[in-house]
Image (tube, rainbow over all chains, first blue to last red; front, side, top):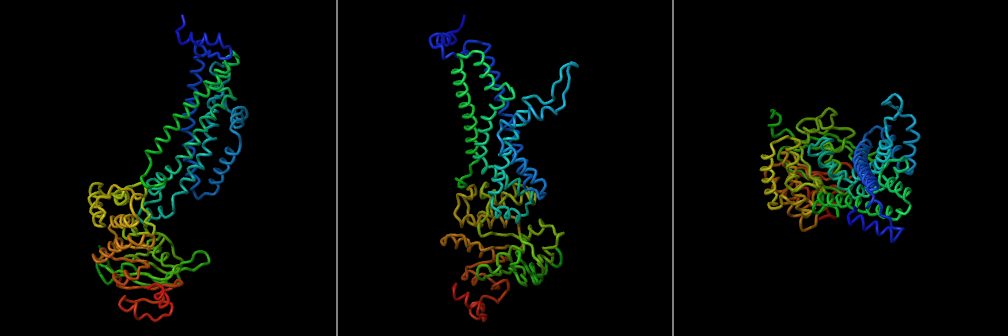
Length: 251
Length: 251
């Protein structure tokens, strides 16, 4: 019945009981892997986007003259940068989760309006966003005052100077650091396991809890998936960096 | 154009008793002079004598503490002044060129007329190409600033400033950051401008150049104009010991 591919892994398991690649011959386990992979991808993409938006917004808020605004942003950065993301996830889901409103689809169940996936997205986006604020701020500060003066003396408004001169340059300066932080973010999504988000690590742990002989195979799959996933991200970011490269500018 | 502006005897730039302090340090201690249309004036003097500050005050990159600076009869440091209007009339070239590194030479020249003056892009392109030719950089239109020598960058900066069709050009030690062999090409460009009747205010250390192109030379030291006169008499008949000492060191 089974294809030769599945048969191979079944045979392998029979001859080597420590190498049970169960997800290659048991369709139910394969589905769990795919679901985990999909959730991980979804979580990664959404968090990358939100964290970049938070980073840009925070860096912009920090250029405002209002001291209170800048202090709030500073406080946010200190909190999220100086505490472990695992604790942040637990805090958001278990502590703040208690206070979020619920709704009831059938008059019996009470479902919180923010799911565990929702909390993972919020928590991880703010975590990576805090670093992104600092990354973009450093990029903006790297643009010399004299370049801004040149555009000012050509009659550019403050907004035009930012839009056409400062931000395009600051973004290029920020890209390598942003690259690192996003890699970190993708890897940190595995910690959403602690609030039962069905991402890849969660699924793999579930599989080897059910079938303890599959542990080695599950670990192997995790490493391979993350090497490929982060590899794609880094490849894309580096191509983007090269595309944005200006001849004779920077390195 | 109003009657006043047509009158060639009416100064384009007029400074009266200008004072400027940075904190406790008073860098300008009552500077007054007039610049008429088509006139070329050179400001010389030892480092730290306030020359650059002075020139930066004329297009409101620095504010002043007291006194008056008028361009076309309009007070530059009036808080209600439209800085855009001022900067359309006053071009500025900097010591460090301050080109926009992410734009090609041609784009550098085109940016301000297109974005600030909202002129038609194709017409601006034609004019920008003419200006690039005028500063003898034909063939370098698509080069990025990082691919050009200092002298070439500075000539792009001059073209960029001219693209706004200013009435006055300010040159802030524009050859000080250049290799000796490229100084000349920049000075030739400025000389041609001066001969075409462009009103120029230059801060410079190039005494030979000042002698050749200036209609009037001002020697500043310690925040005041110590001595001034046309080059024919300034270099030979200056009487103040500070001027003589400075000239003896530099000539």
